[in-house]
Structures are given as structure tokens and as C-alpha cells.
Image 1 (tube, helix red, strand yellow):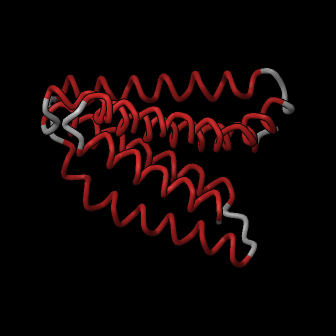
Image 2 (cartoon, rainbow, N blue to C red):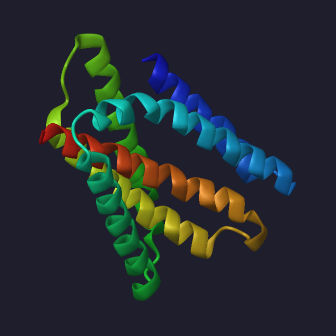
Image 3 (tube, one colour):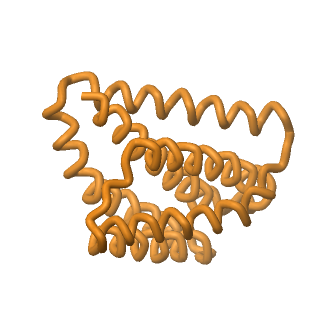
Length: 168
């Protein structure tokens, strides 16, 4: 729960710094804080994954890259505004957070189906945030926009990596 709380706090603080700051240096500070925090959070999972064989991390990274690229192409080529997903993402995020907390409290294993559901959640978040970047972010807030997309891509990578690890 401590890591989950730290991740949420890190996301809130760094997003606040990046999104609300008119100063570009403050935006970069928020992005830097988030990247360092993500590195600390991902280190244990990547260490475990590296012991499972040489291809696990690379396969998950390639799958993440292709899925992110495909989703980005969808947003750019269809011209569709995916910001309508915002409300559903908030509800799904709260449900996912509740399940994660319950799994810690009651010692439950959420399993592979939860990981697949979170991949779908991250994919929807990428569609939403890419639309946000294209339509809502001012051009001088490119750092905040990159932070929003980076967080969704890292969430996608986390759960794709968990899926690949479960196959070993």
C-alpha cells in the first residue's frame, strides 16, 4: 500500500507542478520528479523480470511501443475526439484502485484477467490523453502534455510486462 500511495502522491504532485506552472522550468521539474519516481517504482519489477529470461522485458517493451503507436495513429487519422472517455476512465480508475487496495488488505491475487483489464484501461487513457494533447493543451504546455502521456504509457508497460511475466 505504501508504494501505491507513493505512486499516487508522486503523480499528483508532479502533474500539479507541470500542468499549473506558467514557468517552463517548473514544468520540467514536475516531469523530472515523475520520471525519477517511476524509475524507483519500476526497479523491483524490472529486476524480477530480468531473472525470467532475456526476452521478457524486450517483448513487453516492443508490445507497448506497437500498441501505443497504433493508438496514436487511431487518434491522428480518425480525427475523433476521445475526451468523452474521461468520465468512464475516472470510474474505472476508482474501481481498479479499490481492487488493488482490497488485494493488499485481504491478500488476494488479482490475476491475469486484471492485468488484461488494466491494459485496456491504459489504452483508453492513451486515447483520451492523446486527444487532450491535440485539442486542449496550449502549445506552451508540451511538458505537461508529455507527462500525461508518459504516465499512461508506463501504466501500459507495467501491465503488459506482468502479462509476459505470468507466461514464464
